[in-house]
Length: 355
Image (cartoon, rainbow, N blue to C red; front, side):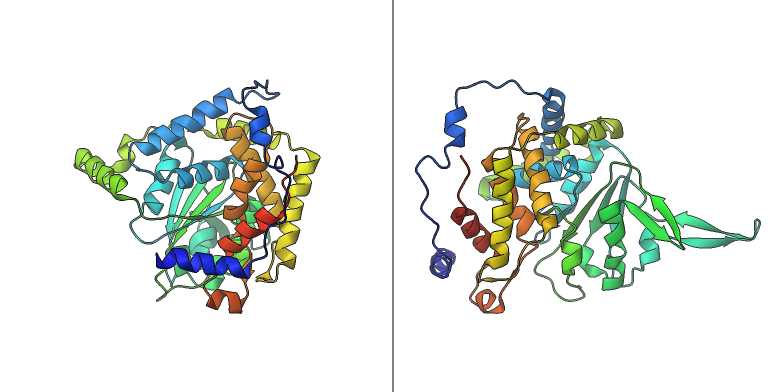
């Protein structure tokens, strides 16, 4: 009850949504009962997405939003930061997703003593050839799972800047390109502060989504125990089949990039982003990278739904996980308990939905 009261108090600080016409958000209603013929054939993509979900559901109970956003992140060529308390299946879900793909996988455990060369690689002197040879680090793979990313110091986190943005690494004046597909999945614990280093804004901005993982409810908790009992000694990853190849993933990513976005929807995304920069409760608004991220994510959500066109609902679905880690709440409002998610939700309500 206390939490609900706080949320009601916060709404008093936020600007009231502008009045919109009754049919302003009726885009779904107008299309109900109508059949559209897609320009793009998304049948294979949809089947593969459903198969990934089925494989992961063999082990993971619930967490539908997390799984959807991880798949959308893969299709949109993005990276995801998964945040949640220990034991809510952050790491295992990322590992299961990787297992369902027939691609290279690398897991890096971030620790306070980890150096950039431990991730990227280093040049080693070869006594036989009397030359330095570059030994690749674990980052040279397709899917990278970084566990407890906030446990490494800033210089180690900074080593990821170039590779996450440009999919290349520059060492000793030489550039090394990484093979596609390339995706970073990172986890962190929001509660524990001892021995952790806050991710800098530039690092957070490189993640397409920040996915908050909540506790399961009672029924889900019972199902988790039931599945764990049925697995007995069997490893969780052993029940997952690998079926999606690098070539198929690249093909699906190309299809997602071709999803149609009308001009008025591009304006809708821009209006949401600009509104974050002028909001009195935000110290830092969203950058153009954020607007591009919403565009890519909404295309991925549309394709996963079997549509080759984006709707306002796709944009609204993408907005909060794309934006809430990219903006900074003013200290005064943060002390009052106001969160970036609440502010972004109010901003979305104030921006008129295109018809």
